[in-house]
Length: 117
Length: 111
Image (cartoon, rainbow over all chains, first blue to last red; front, side):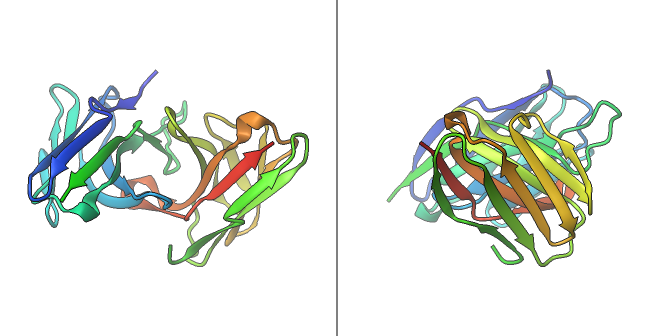
């Protein structure tokens, strides 16, 4: 079935480095993708989204890139800080058989990002 | 998280007992969702609601039921808890395309 997945389950970086978290998707019909951050003991938090008609979207210290040709998206975090340590998930719409999502999302497995001071 | 609260935050229950988790929102969102989170499985959708008394099953709905009698409350019931339902349960509100707001989660342990 359709799924969203991640290449790397863990990523360790030094403070100040740039981090790149990857996600592969298989549903070419997905029209948007979202990245979430989950800190220990908390619920996931929305970071940034990107629509399928875009290749790149920038936020504050974060950039999401979408490559529809290879069905891949990535989250880039600039100047990574210890507070960025968390699990990062990508998500895409989850449609019913009739093609309606009712706002449902399918989440990837997640990547653990650890930032060392 | 502001606008959405889950209760209880932690619960330990015995196998075979019924358990109800509550999600309360003050954002007047039409859409509400229950997910469970387990190591190796990520977040999986249990049930969702697209309005008062309008609910439907997600991908892991067996053993769970839900009710939504008013906009602000979405209840998840484990009819007869099993050890396989030990998990962290998250409620979310909003709509996927605009990003969910998640609650802080309920850690349920079935012994």
